[in-house]
Image (cartoon, rainbow, N blue to C red; front, side, top):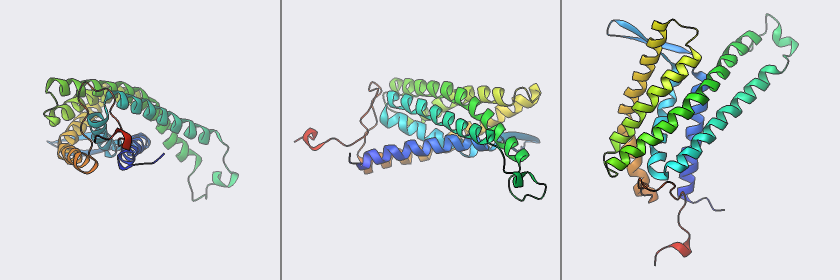
Length: 243
């Protein structure tokens, strides 16, 4: 099988999407904060990676169709699950006796278990939240696309993110942090994370337009019409090319 430029682009988009999703889950256990308007706003550092998934979800939605994106969503959930299995298996293996000594300079058992046990909890929560939110994103994206007749890319990109990420943030924050935080702290984490996501979604809109233009001009791929569920991911073969 020949990997033409269009198929290579598709593989690149999907693989980058998968990496950002898994890395976002792995680092998501760390909370950071900033001060604004006289108060402290707390959010997960996983937000460093997730904005890239927003961009790629919209691009994949736009050019490859909702059926393709649903398959990618299921594959992404499977990859998070696979990561969980590897982490769980690594945690279950016995430690080398030297690594348990007080003067051991490397990763200690308590540090490993604290970081990666938390990561597995986040990954499991992420699988649930991501599956729900991404299916909502796909539906809202194509609803706006159909209603606007393929116009106003900014509306379907930002609008679908605004709806889906509100659901995602409530679900994953509840599953990961809900039982550890008070109601006030939980709502602070939820709304801070959500507004960070929404703000990023608005800020990356020019990037979506730039990628949209690049894909159309360099790769000759037209956006999938709203009524098309699955667009072709490779260039047409010579015998199918128009005369």
